[in-house]
Length: 91
Image (cartoon, rainbow, N blue to C red; front, side):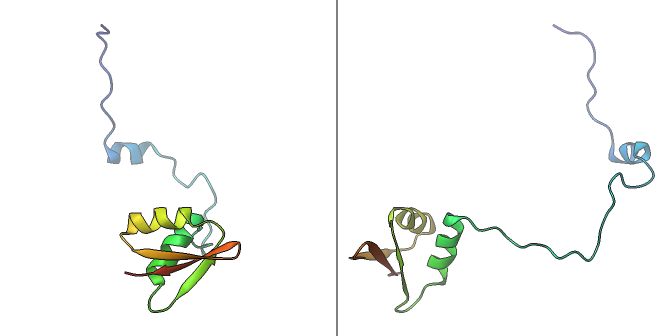
């Protein structure tokens, strides 16, 4: 077993006192935020949450829609339309 003592951390004030006087990187202001990035799952979730009434959408594969609907607790129904699947939100 190693008998040397290990540091338990430095208090924030002591760490700030050891920090350099100015920022290491040049900070910029008034640059707009690029916004959120949406992947397929986030797009499906936001679409399912926004749906109401007779709203529906089509998609090639309904498998990810069922997965996201189950995570959200949303009931959906689907019907085949040619090579695509139409999705409706029931509740």
